[in-house]
Length: 208
Ligand code: 3PG
Image (cartoon, rainbow, N blue to C red; front, side, top):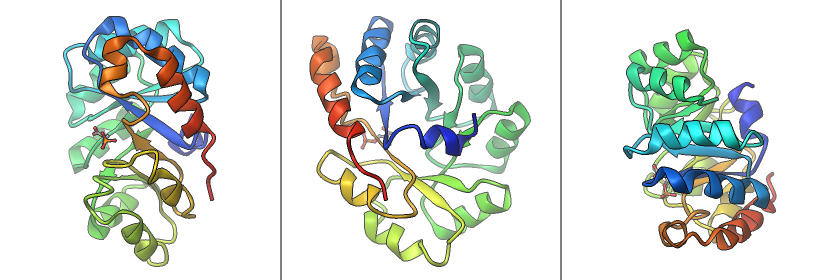
């Protein structure tokens, strides 16, 4: 599945930083049950790759990708664990080359118009706008809509239930990413019902 088709599956991509492998499958099940099948597991914990593999194996309804992919080695590791897509906070020519060669659907991060143009030249038309809130939020996205008419974005970083609707109302926003759907305290407590409710509310958000 291409990255645009993956982004079209749900309005919100939960960004999951998993500390305990045992949390991975019940967490993924709660999110999928709530209506969010696209999951990003950040490669920022020792448990990340094993968590990704466990969800891939045991929750086939989920479309699981790896986040915080920074280099070619992590592209390989993520794919070996079963990642169906990758996400990065920014991008380099080497990383872009690695994902193209590996055939991994990819959502590369950008923060500026020039970064967006470099990725456009490399053939990427759906970009992660990161860190969205800190880098200008909806005002930035509105301002670039006309000059970057061929590009769409998945804003991520500092977005919550209260601010997601304003992002999703923009025509150049394909979906948004965020961690608010899976609060660390709910994960630690195994409160999967709360996470399912948060996911259901996020899944019901309307897109432009
Ligand atoms: C991240 O890298 O953790 C994501 O961008 C999520 O950001 P958030 O926690 O602000 O939603």
